[in-house]
Each structure stands twice: as C-alpha cells, then as structure tokens.
Image 1 (tube, one colour):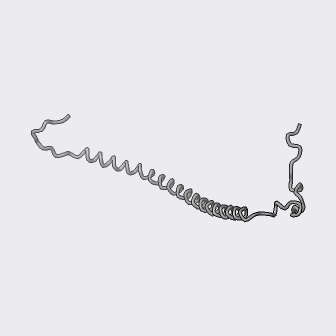
Image 2 (cartoon, rainbow, N blue to C red):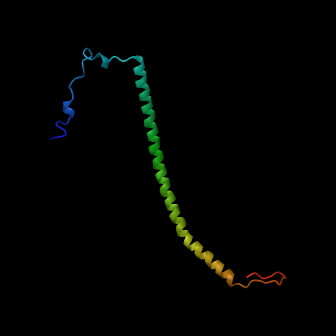
Image 3 (cartoon, rainbow, N blue to C red):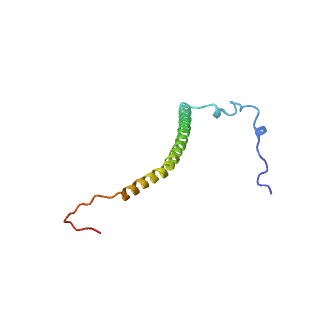
Length: 109
C-alpha cells in the first residue's frame, strides 16, 4: 500500500483564474481586510529590513571575532618572551647582595 497515491505538480494548477461571478467572496474584500493586508505588508517590509540589518551585523560580528582571535594569538605569542624576561630580571635581583641593617627587631624565619 502506498502512503501517497498522487504527488501534486505545477501541471495540476488551473490554467485560468476563478470566475468572479461563481466565487464573489474571492474578490469582495471590505475595508478592514484591505487595511489588515496593508499592515501585514508593512510589517513584512520592516521585517525584511530588520533581517538585512541583522545579516550585516552578523557579518561584522564574525569579522570582529576573527580579529579578536588573531589578537589573542599575538598576545599569547608575546607572553612567553615576556615571562622569560621577567624570570631573568627576578633571578638577577636575587643574585645581587642586599644591604642589611642591624635592628633590634626579631628575625623572621
């Protein structure tokens, strides 16, 4: 048993528009319906504009994200030489003799 016996295609559509005399409800629209359709059209136009703006914004965010990733890699690459230099400076300071002063305060271990 087939679940679908017939698949519709473009050839199944009627060749002519419905006759307004036999289907007057298709052409008879009151003012409220027309205003509703105009409001829906305005809403759709605004929605398309918003969508275009979001596409542009998304493209800019993706580009900015790539720039941040590149900057993060560059900072990470600078981190190793910086830490190495700071370690060398700390080691030099430890090797230099420090001046000591005699005081009456107890020495802390």
